[in-house]
Image 1 (tube, rainbow, N blue to C red):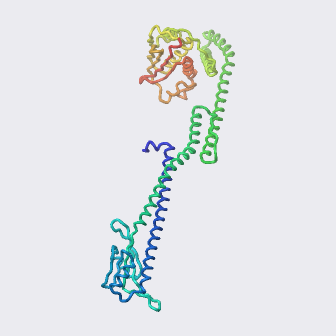
Image 2 (cartoon, rainbow, N blue to C red):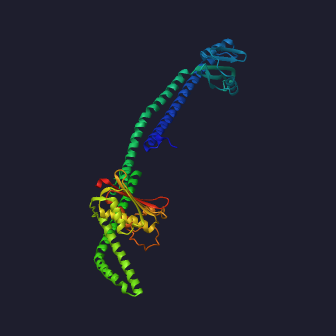
Image 3 (spheres, rainbow, N blue to C red):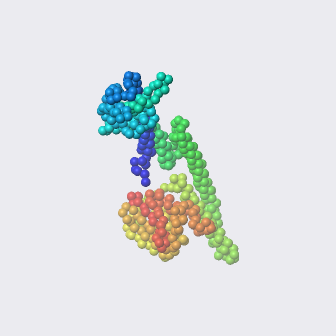
Length: 464
């Protein structure tokens, strides 16, 4: 799990930039300090060995061989304050004697000047060991048996090295706030186009399809901006085409239903005459006439529903608000359709609502009719007034609504079973009911009770 302060892009950029800068500055400072320290120590060592070589070389021609104690003392005095000179059993020393046995053995074996660094009391020392060579007239050099060991204090050199290290650390520390400042500037330059893209994405998600972000530069963010703009352009074009198709479809449905209205009125009149004369027809002709009458009524209902939907889509549907006794209105709705014996009505008396009586009748009729057709008895209607709302519940005891049907129960022409194309309704009843409820500022929901389906209509009482 990431730490909370690393979840944002800005903190991650800052941390990464500062770490890279600090590590780079520390590496550069450490490398520079190491190189300078090595050069400083090497220079000091070279200077000290050269000095000892010169001092011994200057006095060697004046020495007598084999040397006696006085010769060794003289040679030791030339080697420095901390020196040891040995020759077989003779020895002359003064000051520190830090030379290790390993250095002595190496000098005797290799017959050349060698050095080693030792720590004496916490202070660094350089020990130089060298044999004294005798040069023959023919130029050959042979060991004389005299060995000189001299110790030189490196404290001053060590202090210079520590000073270099301290300066390197200080340089790295000075680079830290500069790195933070540069990181903030870099993060700002990177995050600004990201924020602009985020804002554009939100505007697109809110439906502002014309939202765009001008690309700046030619980097990856600019390429991403161009891609998002192209995607938004494509979505906007598709949405415009879809809206145009939907508008054409709605206009086509409105035009067709309007054009069918006049011939259907004539056909309805003919069907009424045919229905009157059907009793005198032969059985086969009577059955055909009844089928034609039923289909004509269904077609008239479908055209009326289409025209009602067209009015909702065009925004021309208006509610004629009047004070309505809800219990009486529901009771009249059931009585007018002959459903009184099939529906159990439980209505709180005295509930007066400001609403369009005709549209309320349409909503109740659609809900009760749907319960009677697709549910099972008993179908119950309950009217109540909780708080500032008026609630009408229509409950049946049928199989209920499946999870697949429930989200689409108010969709236009939606059929739960695609194979059932011939149903008594037009497929628009519940959609029209929902539009009427929305026209009044109310809500209409469908749910399962566990033993059937229930539709709950709620209308605000402020329409009074």
